[in-house]
Length: 65
Image (tube, rainbow, N blue to C red; front, side):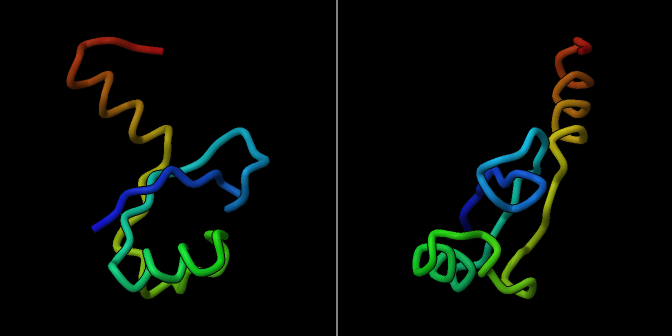
């Protein structure tokens, strides 16, 4: 399993994003094209928004942003 930080427009030019967990095949698709837009939806195990990730971190560590 591989984890990637993907920007919300699935490119490198954006201000928000998500963390994506990919299957091995999804990882291969990403390596082949170097573009997350070419990863099949069925190869994405889950996506976690950056807002949710930061919120979870803050709950665990008792901080806020």
